[in-house]
Each structure stands twice: as structure tokens, then as C-alpha cells.
Image (cartoon, rainbow, N blue to C red):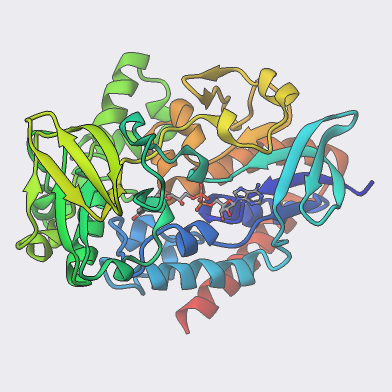
Length: 407
Ligand SMILES: Cc1cc2nc3c(=O)[nH]c(=O)nc-3n(C[C@H](O)[C@H](O)[C@H](O)COP(=O)(O)OP(=O)(O)OC[C@H]3O[C@@H](n4cnc5c(N)ncnc54)[C@H](O)[C@@H]3O)c2cc1C
């Protein structure tokens, strides 16, 4: 059976970024499995724009400069991710990992091609699709009538139909805008008493030096808090209760200011929740807690994601049992390693250990560096290589990446 040092599961921002860093370690054999940027391509709506600024969304090097206008269109970001993959991790294998189980020399990894390999270490950067949250009120409604926002790639086919969007965050509000623009009759139904628009935050971002003091370049979290969130090694040392509090505050449901004019003609019902949903012919009837009802053609559940790594179907039972978990999150050490030696998690599952930055592209750089530090330390013992050589190789790769994207 072929053996590699590190197998990375997932070729999204975290998997690609980790691979780009690990490749620079001489003598380390790294394999990356997954379709590059497939989550962004298949599970986000056509026409979407990123809420994060470019400074928080690049995968390679901030010196790339601001080449993408804000807000960044989804299509451009996918293009950028693919370009990055092509240049920085060309050997990515577009295969699905079906199973990972503990083996004699590390982990046994089975692929959908029928191939199996042994990896001394495994890095899971498999994203959030399995964590899509669907409230139990919708259990009896087929997905044809009530779907999660991650299952709707093109909202234009809802033209002339009546759609209820459940949720009050960026995904719900932007989906509602896209549906409205596509000619659907839309209503947003949100539990919170009011929509949090980020207009004050947009103004605070225009204050030059003062903005830079309030907001870390990763730009996750409110003024001030952003500086803590942007430093995961500091954030993880805060008392647990404070981490939880700041974590919730940093990812609370909110809409970018630039969405407001696009939703001027869309009804938004706040302070209301759906208490039951039932199919009625080719429609759905929703009962709200205020006693009112809605009959719609479709319900779009923009209700977010809840991390629970047990939902990664490729993790064997044995493996899962060996991972110390809290509320579905793996407990990770400074090298993003679980209680099962050699197994690492990146991206949203790392948020319990490193804070809300890990839910965003901006966390990929920190995570990749910490991971590489852990792995390279040990790899270097097996295959010594001068640090100078490593730095030159890394600089050469970065140089290539930067120069080509700028063209
Ligand atoms: C609507 C929406 C808008 C968002 N906007 C922003 C934003 O503006 N800025 C921001 O920073 N973040 C945003 N996010 C969060 C964003 O999803 C994450 O920041 C980012 O995707 C994290 O990257 P990742 O590599 O962890 O996961 P992903 O991008 O999901 O990549 C995971 C990859 O793993 C692959 N994979 C999964 N299982 C397997 C398997 N078994 N075998 C092989 N490959 C596998 C998938 O195909 C996928 O390509 C948004 C999320 C949503 C839902």
C-alpha cells in the first residue's frame, strides 16, 4: 500500500493553504484529496458577494495587493482559489475520501477510486456541508419544498414563485435579495427582534488609523474584539466563558450594509419563529408563533451550520472514539492536533480551540503555520534540510504565486 507523510482531506481555502505551506518542507510527502473550491462552487448562490474584505480572503500573501474590488464577487473568489491551487498545489487529487481509520503505521485512507493508502498524519480540512442545520420543525417537509441554503446553487429558478427565507444573517438576507432580483415573491422570517445591519461597522472601517486600531486585518468580530479574535494564540488563553461570549458575539447573525438598498422592497418579519411546517399540495404551510400563517411554494432555510465532527461520514467509529470532543468540536492542541496523535482538524471544527477566526478564510494562514511548525519539527528530524533552503523554496513559491496572480 502506498505511504505518504501527510494526507490532507479537502481542497478548500484551509486544505490548499495547509498544503502550500507543507509542500515547502523538504522531504515531506504530502497528498491532497478533494475538488478544489467545490464548496464555494456548488453550495453558495450564483451572484453572491463575500462579506469579508480582500485583506481577509487571500490565501497566499497579503503583498498580493488589493486586486479584487469589494465586496468580492463569488465567481472571482472561486477563480482566485482555483488559480492558487493550480500554482501552489498542482498535484491536488480530485478524489473523495471515503474512509479514514487507524492503521499500524498511522492511518488507512480509502478513496472513491478504490485506491487505499497509508498516511502517517491526516489533516481534515473538509468544511461545513455535513453541519448544515435544519430545524426539526421542517422534518416532515420534503427537501423539494424546504431546502437548506447550501443546497441551492442557482436561486433564479424561483422566479415568479413565493419563497419564505428563514434566518436573519448574511446568507438569509443576501439570498432574499437574489431571489427578489430574480423575480420571486420573498419574505424573510427571522427570530431575532431586529436585523443587525453592519452600517455602523462600515463607518468605523473608514477611519484610517483609528480603524486599524479597532479592527485586525482579518476583520472578524466587532470593534476591539476583532483584535483579540485575530490573534488566536491570545484568544485561546482567555477564560473559557469569555471565549464563548466573544465567539458568539463575533459571529452573530448580521447583514452587510451594502445589502440594505437591495432589500428595500422585501418584507422582513422579525421577532417571529416557525412553530410548524407541513406540506399542503404543492405548497408548504408555515405556522408562526404569533398565530399567523404563510403558504409558500418553497422555504429556504438559511439557518446556518452546527459543527459536529461525528457527521463526517469518512471518520471510522474507532477514530471518532479516540478524539476528545466538546459539543461536537475536537479539542485541539497548539499544532491543531487532536487527542488521537497524528490527526489534525482545520477550519470551522477548530473554532472551539482557536476561536471564531477559524470559521473564516482569514484563519487559514495562522492554522497552516501552526500545523507546519508541528509537522515540520518532526519531519526535519527524519530528513534534515537547511532552514535557509526551506526559506528560499518558500519565497520562490510565494514569488511565483504573487507574480502570476497580478498579471
Ligand atoms: C453563504 C456563505 C458565505 C460565506 N462567506 C464567507 C466570507 O465572505 N468570508 C469568509 O472568510 N468565509 C465565508 N464563509 C465561510 C466559508 O465557508 C469558510 O471560510 C471557508 O469555506 C472555509 O474553508 P474550508 O477549507 O475549511 O472549507 P471548504 O471551503 O468547505 O472546503 C472543504 C473542501 O473539502 C472537500 N471535502 C469534503 N469532504 C471531502 C472528502 N470526503 N474527500 C475529499 N474532499 C472532501 C469539499 O469538497 C471542499 O472543497 C461563508 C460561508 C457561507 C455558507
